[in-house]
Amino acid sequence: MHLNLGKPEELTAVGRALSVPIRAQILSIISKQQLSIADIARELKIPASSCAAHIRALQEADLVRVEQIPGTRGSIKVCMRNVDRIDIRLVEPEEHVDDVLKIEMPVGAYTNVKVHEPCGLADEYGIISMDDREENFYLPEHIHAQILWTSKGYIEYSFPNQIFSLPFKANINRVYVSAEICSEAPGFNPEWKSDITLWINDTECGTWVCGGDYGERKGLNNPDYWTSGRTQYGELVNFEITREGTYINNRKNGDVTVDDLKLMDSHKITVRFGNKEDAKHVGGFNLFGRKFGDYAQDIIMGIGYQYAGSGKNGA
Image (cartoon, rainbow, N blue to C red):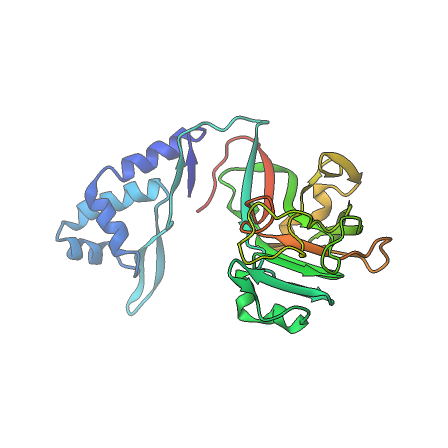
C-alpha cells in the first residue's frame, strides 16, 4: 500500500486504524493464518463484539478483508491481512513534476551474453579464470565482475520492471540507461572505433560511436593489480528514450520513443549492449563497474514519470 498527502482520506484512515495497539496484534495474528472473529477474540481474550469493532476499523483502512469460505457446517467468515507493507510519503505529489525510479545493476549480473576473443572479465582482485575463454562468462564468479570486454557480440541485463510498483498513477515519459563504456582492441588503442548499440526489450534504440579503447593512463578507480598496457577507462554514456525520440548524451540519435519499448508487457526490462553484425565499426566494447574505470557506478537504468492525479492504489 502506498500513501501520500495527496490521498488524505486513505492516510488518516490508516492512522486511525493503527492508533489502537490491539489492532496491531490482530494484524500479527492473521499474518500466518486465516481466522474468524470468534477465533481472534479467543486468542486475544476479548469479547467478540469488541473484536468485530476492531476488524471493522482495519477493514475501513483496507488493511484487512473478510471473506466467506466453506466450513464443516456451511460457510464461515474469516479475516485475512490485505497488505504486507505500507509506504508513506509525507509530501503531496505535484502534477507534471518529474520523478524517477532508478536501479543500479552490477556489471557482472548479466543474464545473456555472446562474446568473441579477445574477451574476458575481472573483479577487483584479479582476472576471473583467464583471458580469451568464452566459457568463463558462465562461471558462477561472473557475478562479481567489475569489468568485462569482448571484441564483438553483446551483453544483456534483466532489470526488474519498477513500473508495477509506482506509488501512484503516473505517466511514463522516459527511460534512461547510463554506463561507462569504451571500445575493445588488443591491449589498448585510442583510435579504435566501435559502433555500440543499445537495445531495450529487443527494440533497437540507438548507436553510439566510441572513438577508441583507452589505456594511456590508469583508470581512477582501478585496483593496483591492473597493469598498464590494458584498457583503463571509458566514457560515461547516457542513452535516453523519451516521447520525442532517442537521445545519446543529450543529442538526438533516433526516433524510437518510450511507447515503442512496450514496458507494460513484462515484469522485467531487458537492456542489451552490443555490436550489430553489419555495423560499420565492429570494435567490441568494455563495460566498467564501480571499482574500475573513471566513474564509480555500475549500469544504471531509470524510469522517469509524472504524477497524473490522485487515485486509489492497491497493495
